[in-house]
Image 1: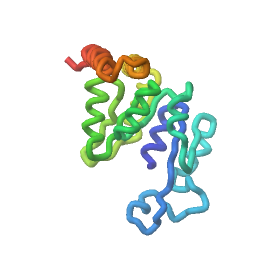
Image 2: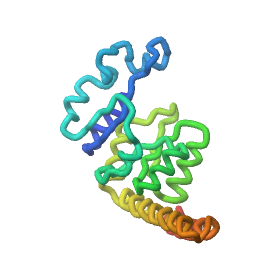
Image 3: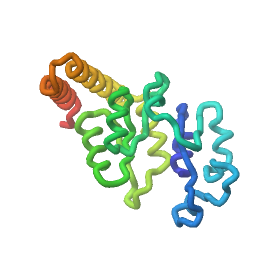
Image 4: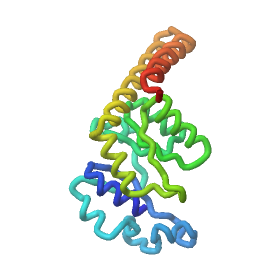
Length: 197
């Protein structure tokens, strides 16, 4: 958690971070979070982090309405584990992704989203699996201010438009086949433009 906190701080960008301390202090993983200090839900974050980022960061210690957050005009990006539901919600709202897959199909989804469709930037891990604060800061800044971020934003906007177009076709009686064909054509066009050569 320290690396994420310091990465967000180093990025200099505004953020909303839904972060919860572990619920079982006896769990070995809880020691990583310093979860024994239950009076403060953010006690496991680096000392002074909240104070240093209070003007540009918002911390939420419980559930947040993900769909409303993604739909909000101030949302400029989403750090996503690349599970399929979160991915679909992100695409529907046209929000670019910073991909941080953890396990199962998430890694394959992250490759498809970043290298295939071009709507995500992937965090690079060290050999031991740790994503360092500098990498987090670099990717957040790139997504929000850099050329790659502009490309990703453009691609996710095109994909969102294709999804909306496909849904309209389905809802107007054109049928799922026509809508699916429309999405496939638009999706292939995006893929061709963003493909790594």
